[in-house]
Image 1: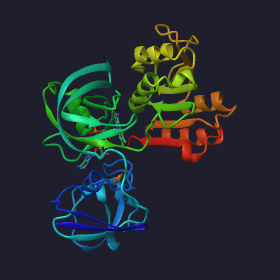
Image 2: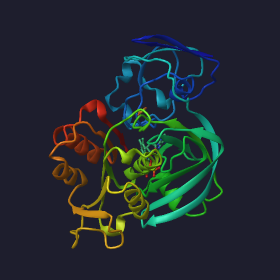
Image 3: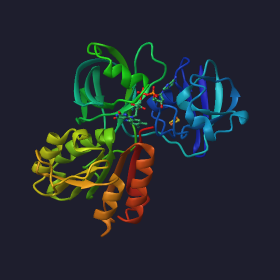
Length: 346
Ligand SMILES: Cc1cc2nc3c(=O)[nH]c(=O)nc-3n(C[C@H](O)[C@H](O)[C@H](O)COP(=O)(O)OP(=O)(O)OC[C@H]3O[C@@H](n4cnc5c(N)ncnc54)[C@H](O)[C@@H]3O)c2cc1C
Ligand code: FES
């Protein structure tokens, strides 16, 4: 079965695939197809069916909201092709030089409660996966409809051990399952690595500005781990703004503290509390971590008003927080749009 893909930069063929997720098939053949969430929410992976038939696996996906379905528009991340078809994508596509994502199997080996609504979990893969700091995978549990995106917390250029953090979402399929207990030993499917909000210290000589809300700190831990290992903070500065509701909602603080210590003063970490007014300037247990109050993007705006024009900006968390933080990085920090990378967790 063959999918022909017409793009602004030429035509490509996906041959020999059998009724698989079209986005994943294209990415695993090295095509730089457009996408962000890879899980049906953002609408970025839009394509138009020019001929043939495509099956939609999640008809209610929020990403369809701005698509012209009557004209044949589909979300490639929610589509399978049961036979030959032709798709048109309104953007440039090329063949990537980077390692190609693919399907892995894995087993959940460990879980650890970090706060009342945040859990850390480790997955052992059946093979080694190459990835860039800041990337994510799509996890699928047998019997649960759809995949869920989770950013790697750890970093290694290639590894069969991945670490994640999941925030409990009321009524959420995957997160409630994680909190339901007895998930250790469960088999899961893992597609990756994907995501463009990446940091590669070998080719990026910049200061880092990181703004994360709640579980958005996940990929930032990977970026910081990678930066420390590469000695990045021997030459550059880093600023991390990590937003949570109260002091008790903070997590990975000993790890962040360790990063700050290893960076010898070049990395500042601010824990920003939206629902509590801290009585002191630094964390009672981790004095390397500063405390601030308000919404995380507002705290970042106060601290960055002097500008950080040459920095790379990384943002992750709930969509409204990400949008607020991007505005701050553009206007207050004056970081150009091309140097801002983000993941919206929703
Ligand atoms: C790039 C990216 C990285 C992320 N990283 C993290 C992270 O590190 N930690 C974290 O806690 N969260 C992360 N998220 C959010 C995470 O993917 C989940 O949305 C969140 O954990 C809630 O999942 P849930 O299953 O509990 O909720 P649910 O409401 O059950 O599902 C949430 C998502 O699952 C998918 N989904 C649900 N039902 C279906 C269906 N029937 N068919 C197909 N798909 C379906 C959709 O994408 C939906 O938005 C990330 C999101 C993105 C886009
Ligand atoms: S990449 Fe398909 S909807 Fe986001």
